[in-house]
Length: 338
Image 1 (cartoon, helix red, strand yellow):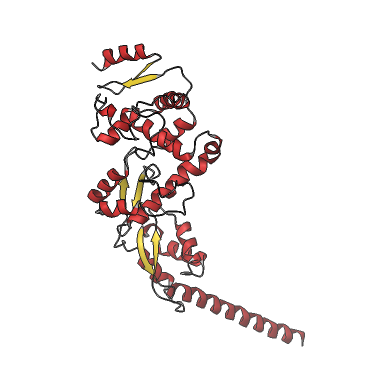
Image 2 (cartoon, rainbow, N blue to C red):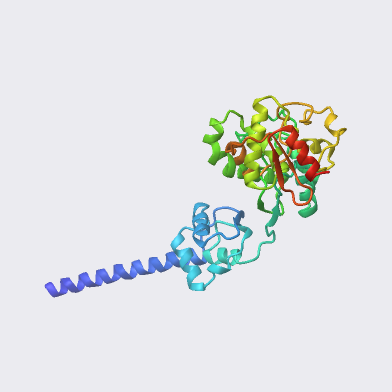
């Protein structure tokens, strides 16, 4: 009697195990080879260098797969994990894991592009570069810079002329070929927030200058001197001039008006009536004269105290020569520039 009961119990347990095994195989099979249709194709972008873990997690979040474990197991069994291609892919939530992987290993029809924006470039120079490098209309880009990007709280009032200049962070970027000028601008602004505004927010708040003033002065320093140590010295020099209401006398701001690129402004240049002429007017110009690097922005926030009041850069190697008095500065000009 007992043996028959045990036999029946064993048969029931065996049946349950087989049933669970069949259900498991069905689940695995349906996950890999077929899923219930939910909706149409959707864009899924794999970033260059993105890990399998990141891709799997995003596929799960977007409901393209039901199991990260099964997806990664399939990649491992088929040895296709290293074959996933960066770029744009169109997936549907009714696709099986096999179909998804097959789509993801095909080179995207729209491979991303790489652009490099040079530190100190104006918005006009960025527009010219984008038109020549990735065929974005320069006029369309400049038109897009006049629009309101209020999502970025650090920006100055959009009513200011060329209000985005100074905040389009110079760096190397990956851009999709179908990106709009607005897409590119938002990417540059997001990078400014990530690399400048967020990490330096506390020190910016402690400064006696607004962010717009900091960026404006940084844009001048960017064009005046090259290396970090000189930038910190010149930042302190300029900050003292500003506090004493003494003109900055920056050739970089005059070049911004004349577009001449002269290492030293002419007497005629220094008499131009423009708010950007820092020989004629004390204080800062209305806004940045370019898009400065993080190095120049940090120089304004963390200047190197010194007793210099004048400086010039040599013609041959761009060396910075400092002077404490105007007479010393005149001697330096005679020695290094004449």
